[in-house]
Image (tube, rainbow, N blue to C red; front, top):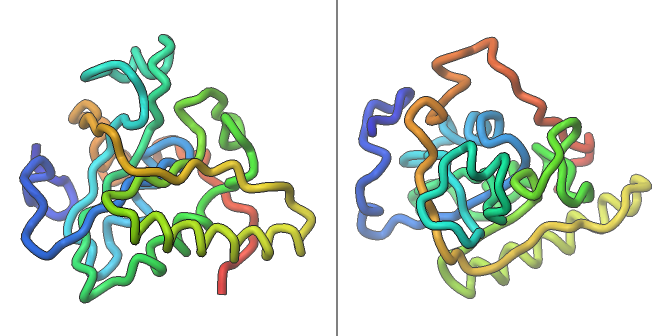
Length: 183
């Protein structure tokens, strides 16, 4: 598959010395759009992760008990963009206190997750979570429900979902943050 915005393959191995992180923050169409133009982000893709079903389809994730989340995989050059910068965008682009939903999108596939490839990134993600939790409490929001763990699987979503909002600029995006910013 070719990235619609960047015109490079999305399904190749991670380039040497690049890192990857996987975010779930609601409908993957809007989440992916937040990251594909960030300087230092090599490529993005949408997929399904965290569940128990191998190679699920969109219909499986929506209508069966797969436990997968709609996610965005971000492959980035850590010498150009720091993980903390990506985490800031992640926290601010959705409401991580909503549990199994984002706005009108309800279900386990819309829960907030950060799947990391190493323990150092888990530590960084947890530190940023603590910082953002303080901001949210000061603004009368509840507890963050975001799952932070090592990635256990990732399955590419169907081609028509990849960079969907670039192909369909007026497409649905229910993504909405809290209005709180992480300094």
